Image (cartoon, rainbow, N blue to C red; front, side, top):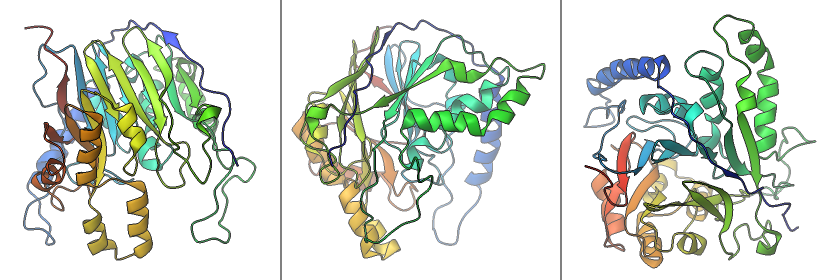
Amino acid sequence: MTMHDKKVDHISHGYSRRSAFALFGTGLATLAATSCAAHATSSDEHYDSPLPPDAYELTGSVEGYNTKLILLGTAAGPLTVPGRSGTATVLMVGDRPYLIDAGPASSRKLGQAGISAADLGGVFITHMHNDHIADLFNIFWLPGVTLAYKFTQTVPIFGPGSAGALPIPYQGGSIPIQSPSRPTPGITEMLSGLRDAYAYEINIRNTEKAAQADFGQYISAHDILPPPSAGASFDNTAPTMEPFTVFEDDLVRVTAILVPHGPVFPSYAFRFDTDDGAVTFSGDTAKSDNVIRLAAGTDILVHEVVDIDYYARTMKSPAMIEHMVETHTIAADVGRVASAAGAKHVVLSHIGPGDPREVDDDQWERGVRSTFTGPITVGHDLVQIAVGRRSGP
């Protein structure tokens, strides 16, 4: 069965917004600081080292740079781990932030980074696994019905459209189907359903003194489906193809390409081209020639990474190991992709395992360094990385 539909609408919006970061982020930062102190003094019998602290404020030297990368959360999987939250990244171009994925705790990390959802120039979801969408609705819903900040312009949200049908289960047979009449909603249908599910809470808040109008009118969802010419199918979810444009405004041009992530379809990598340089996000993927094609000459390649040996030791499940091999990328292969693409700098994120006590930064870097000679950054939460050349003092 060929899976295609209409391509995402091309949008060309010029956003010009500046709004103050208020109580929402400040309160979260204070709470996180208390939590951080508690973590730093605790220990676990399973480890020789103490629990790594959770980051609660931005680090990294980016002064004088117009464009910067902010790693909000850097752990793979649906659960946050000591020292790392769920995967989410911001590309800040001037004063305008663009969010890529929204894993667990993204709303908290945005607050700690001093970024208001009302200021987002766009949100881009690579695929519909829970560790990439868990906090997407919360980013807008939790502060959106209070006076923490005010929406003044629409925030476009881009993500996979419906797959149209489910693939055959891995082990054959039948599986329980959630919502049989609509089993594969895309990003637009998902957000619409969530607004309906939380209708009472949203409506009752809007009757109270401190509420604002329905925040939902300020988010605009857009399904991304690959061009029919790509020829994607359940047998080949990421065929060789050319990148295609999904969004463009006065600061960025965003292109996408399909990547192989097991049966998940569509699953995308994104590239952001700015006046200061290009940043490419692999999304979740096995080693992929499509990522190489998308990332050609990129200034920064933000790539997922997995340690198969760790899961082989701890999971002891052949099916799980096969899943990891088919859906993720080992460190040496990240280096191979970066080298083939001519990437200038590799940043590791969506790190599995995310707990730094299981696999430390040196081990991750050695793996990539074996096949890549450029700069390597092993991602940690709330780390900032400069993009391009310094544009100011």
